Image 1 (spheres, rainbow, N blue to C red):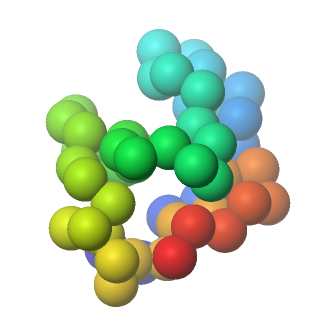
Image 2: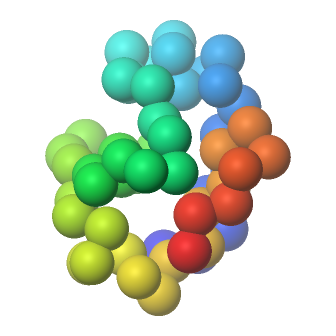
Length: 53
């Protein structure tokens, strides 16, 4: 799981909650469930220009 890019509009259209760098859960664009950040520490996720690592 790396390099998922999603615009805020697309995220909102999917019915997802707002994402912030301080969120303790990340919702993956290609997954229907939440995953703790610890599970994704090797993932690189970009949403509206904000990079989560």
